Image 1 (spheres, one colour):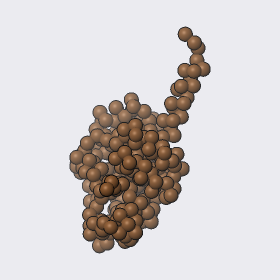
Image 2 (spheres, rainbow, N blue to C red; image 1 turned 60 degrees about the vertical axis):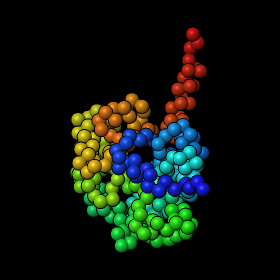
Image 3 (cartoon, rainbow, N blue to C red; image 1 turned 90 degrees about the vertical axis):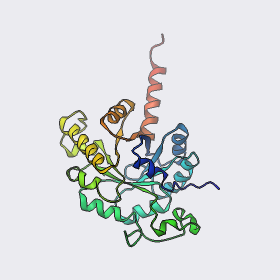
Image 4 (cartoon, rainbow, N blue to C red; image 1 turned 135 degrees about the vertical axis):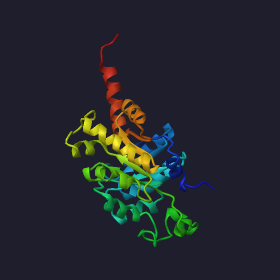
Length: 258
């Protein structure tokens, strides 16, 4: 029987520091997830922070992506226990935690990934993560979902070495826009302070034996980030990729004829 649960396979890929490339899903559409999965991405991420998705979109997206063997990750809107827990119960292969401001906040968020006594995740069996009560391995301490902490505030950057080394953290991820604003160089991605911050994140991840990730607006930016040492690349988002493709084709159609 096929199973929509990732069962920690993607977490193992992160631990091996294999290069993975996926995209953010901001449209709130499981069909968009299926299109991306069919196109060959390594993962998709449902964006509940800035995108149109809510809790109701996570479950069908897990199903749609898993039909192609692609894990579905979720960026929760906040690090609240209930937000993380609901996404995990729906079968998400990993959770991205936004707007972390320091080590204590990261440690508190990571506790929400684990059942007692290690953490404070709510215990229930009638959900996809426990296969509707048929598989209770997760309740016995097995960890299947990866934990991704965003480095996009000054506080998180200052504590990135300790955050990356925190037990339970599988990936540190740069949000370039927020981080550039936090550093006082908005959208200046070639600014020395911004580039130094990227190097600090990669170094912290390397020291902790985990990968570093970043959002790249296009393939050229992605290539530069890979050369810099990033191993988890978010290639734009469904909405931006769609918009870019439409505008590019319109320019061609409306342009001068040869």
